[in-house]
Image (cartoon, rainbow, N blue to C red):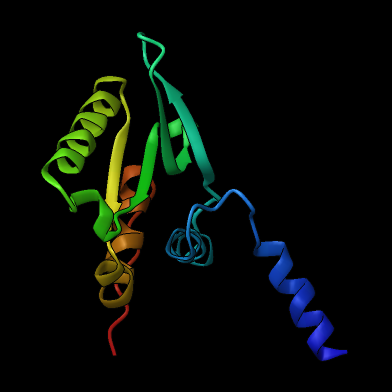
Length: 129
């Protein structure tokens, strides 16, 4: 029955709205690090009715958390579109924090501290070995 219990525990953390395994990894880092559950794939509409999606969001705080895979900068056109998107989100009052696989692997404590700070919470001391 332990296997069944593990599967049931895992299902409580599953979210079909996740855009990628790395977004899931980022979301679980935040939640397991003591932060509130962010909203996956949160829509934001500007005054021109342009729709933007945030990978993860804390709508009440207007904080977005994005996982940046390699495709964001694959071409100059993609890089310009991504920069425009983030400029528009900032103009709408959103603070968007962006992280890569390297950040998640090498600096999870820093990621947690930055998101916690953006949400207005106290920054906990970083664990040292």
